Length: 219
Ligand code: ZN
Image 1 (cartoon, rainbow, N blue to C red):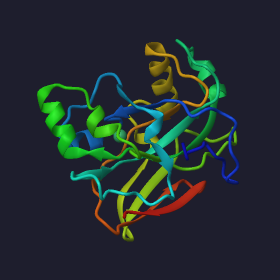
Image 2: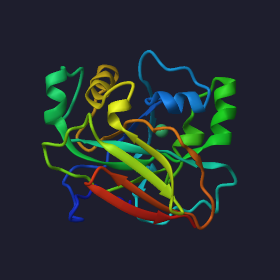
Image 3: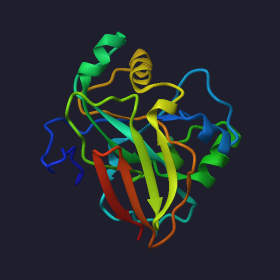
């Protein structure tokens, strides 16, 4: 596999490429825009590690005859095993913070949702999780991170992790109460409002606070 976890100097982080855990509906405005009710507990799903690509690699949608939606999300790299973890064990187990796109075949997802089926065909396809480098410094305040996505120089998503329904530490603790997180797993923490369809030749710019600023394109 071409993907590796890397740091901001493009150096490989010595952690395996694990599973990708995602949460749906973690910003109230986004839950509203898709007509979903605000959840009482996190809604978890997963992507396999074959979903991972590097954020800056062009996103190929040519072979996907569906509505491919972008969802920009803060992503956490897990550095230590977490199994039914206590809250105080979460922060020391975080190895990095970055940005991912949770690419979604929205038409397929809507069909699956309406029939009550799992979402994997809409969410877990190869290349469905472009992921940035990770900031590995330890003192990042996860409860106050702004994230922004622009497409063709127009801001489409803009929010702050302070507006999450479940904050990052709670989310990871909740996840670890249901299944074990291993070193090298990543956790996508939900998308703000403003999701929409990708089109050929779109230019995307994404930022996380003043830590990350990245571009990519759709081909
Ligand atoms: Zn998502």
